[in-house]
Structure formats: C-alpha cells, structure tokens
Image (cartoon, rainbow, N blue to C red):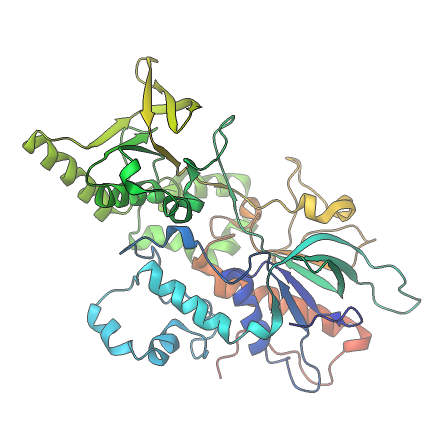
Length: 448
C-alpha cells in the first residue's frame, strides 16, 4: 500500500489482526462508502505478513466459538467475506457441513483469515510499526483537525501519514511472572511453535507447562504426543483444570446486546458479569481436553509407567538457568512446601494483559479522560472520551473490558464491534461540513 503523506485518511488502523481486518470490511461494505465519496482508510501492521496466533496453531486444536462468529456474519450475513463464502471458494463447503460441527480447527480458521486478508491487502502496509501519534501541525483556519501518525517502515526509515481518526488494535500483551525472562528454553505460549521448532526434540527429556487455561492444556497434550520419551509436567495453580461454560444461557454474555447491558449497567451489574461469567473464557478448558488428559494420566497409572505429571495447587517461585538446564522453584499452595524441578524447556501459558494505548498516544494521552480508577473512559462506540481540545477520534479494539465487558477484544463480537466503529467514523465524517453527504448516511450493517 502506498500511503501518501499528502492525503488525509478518514481512519488509520494500527494493527491488522482480525479486529481491524473486520473494520476494513465494515468500511468497505458501508452504504456511505460510494465512488463519489469513498471512505479513505489505511492500516499498518508491524508483523512482516498477516498472522493470528500462529504459534498456537496446534494440530487438531479447534476454535472455541462458532464459525458464524466470523468477521462479518453477525453484521452482514450475505457478505462476500464470510466463513461460508471462504468454504465455498475453497471447495470444502459440503465436506465441512458433513463434519456436523460449529467449530472449525484453528488452522482452518486461520486460512479463512488469510483468504479475507488477500482481498484487502491493498490497504495495509506490513513491517510497518506505528511509533507515535500526535496532533498534526499546520492546519489552517477552517481546516479540520487531524492526527499525524509516525510509522517506522522496517529498514526503509520513517514516514508520516495524516488521519482524522485512528483505530488502535495492537493486540494483547503476553504476561510472564515477575522476575522471569524469556529465552531459548523459557517460552510464553504466544511464541510456542516457533521456539519449539528451534529445539531438537531429542534434547527435551523433561518439560513443564505452567497455567490453568486452554492454551496450557493444549500445549501439555501436544508435548505429551510429540515427545514420547519425555516427562511432561503440568504446573496448575488451581486444584485442577476447570471446564469452560459454553452452555446456551452462559453464552448470552457474548451476545451483542450484552455489551449494551454492561456499558449502561451499574457497578454492581458489571461486577456480576465478571463474577458469574468469567468461567466462560478465563482460565478454563474445554471439556474434551480435560477428559482426554485425565484419561491419559489414568492409563499411565494402570501401566505403572507415568510420564504425565500434574502438580496441582502449585505456583512458580523462581526460574534459574544453568547452561541448558532450567531449575524451577515451585511452592505448594497446600502446605507452602517448596521443591525444585529440573526441566529442559519451560512454557508459561499464563495469559495476557489488556492492550494499553498510553505509550503510543504520548502527549495526546493528556487529552484522554479517565475514570476514578485511572482507566481510559470510552464512549459506547469504542471512542475514547477526550477534552474539547482534541476533536479527532481515537478508537480502541481492545483495552475496554472495564467499559464494554468480556467481548472487548474477543472474536465473539468482532463483526458488530467493527461495524459500530465504522458507523461512528462515517457519522462523524458526515457532521464535518467538508464531507457532509447529499443523501442519507447509511449504515455498516447493510445486508445487500
């Protein structure tokens, strides 16, 4: 994509994962995006190419949401970018239906995302990291205020583009225990397959996985399958894995209408969302994997040949490296007893922290209002609440769990969320005299 410094875009998207990919579609399909007045959008992605959780594309791992919760269907069921359209293009629609499942493998869903991206690649620049956002200088009287986005283009230097809005979707931040550093044998789950592929499996005689969620269980099973000669330790801070609640009533917490209930609810309402429904997504595991791992453990007991070890109610105190050996200090949460475990590789599936835009916003952050807990305030349309001195829009795809609830950064609501952001951007464009349309505004939820 050739992003001209002279052009003022309606929106610049920072990051091009599923959320901003869905936003690009919503903008393209918006009724107000007509040839005479096209919506001008550009996206910048720091990765060298498109990819979504590549390092967790484990064999046979399935999605935890229905294929109907793709990038578009809940907003526009007849979009040419739906998962169904992808299956038809790949000549696998009939076979997929015969599988009788709502949950494709993670690998197939990633292929769907790549297929969608291939149709939108003209509006994204890869190996392009946005390093700063600031108010653009030199806007004269009567000219609309805009933002200047500074982009580091790999080895090509830096460029600057202008936009009236930005949509920040830089993704979650891998979380590691305090004091633990990643290296060639100490990994976070977000880098698992890449780091695992660099090691000779014959050198891994003993491995450990730390965590109680889906990723931890999947990696534990993968290592147990892939390293038949090795001992596999699952270090679980709870008494055992907890099952993910995906029953129909519980799943309503991911409905688009639940965002309204959370956003407009009282503090008591919001607390209830997290207290009663956290087990739909956080530190929980699919029933099938739990039963499979338990069966494996039981079978090894029967054979008196144990390779799979579960260290329940156990936390990691420290990690020390001696050459290629990793010594893990463990503490029991039952009796506080400590022990050391020597392993050849250590995987932390310890989750992620929410996206925080503060560093990226720099001086602009002082214009962004906060709540009593110091968190960014956001409008219902995911636009940060700002002082009157800043009229440009800063939209967040992530980092709004405190205002919008559980689906703030999840795929479950990505189609509707991106549509609402697109509606907001174009509605505000219509309010600008320079861009006021002659006809009605339209909506991102068109279905024809």
